[in-house]
Image (cartoon, rainbow, N blue to C red; front, side):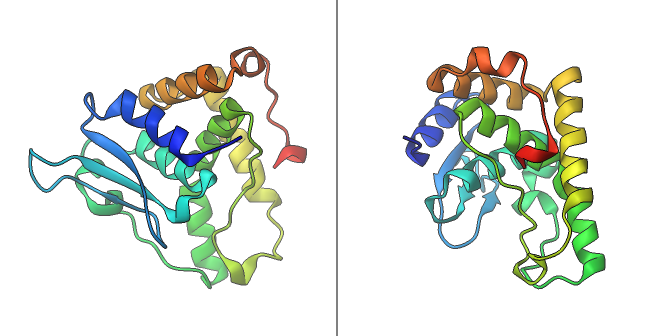
Length: 177
């Protein structure tokens, strides 16, 4: 079974002390909250207790640099669902890398991955270019390596779910997303 509590425990064991960051089951919307003081931890909140949301939000954190991690939601803009096509294209450019890392995390868990446009209004649109960008990034990470924190989390997930051998020769393919 796939429980978000496992993702929280694994993340917090890895990063609560070393990065002063905790993964937290959130409410309606995911958000990253930097610590307000040295006595507090940075918090990654994921939405509704969804397994995929936790992996996605951790992927964003793994990409964010030191300065971005000092800002609420890493300083990114966010427009809710119902974005127009131009804004959706900008969203897709920002989202290819975190969704590629999220996909790698899903593979480490032995869990299926679904590409997200995060836009109900455009759910019927052709996602081929976006999927191709995600595949390109996933293959790049596979050949060049993941960011350090992403690699540590992927490896811990693979150990927990017993998928280490499956990750060695994984082929990222458009049919799978």
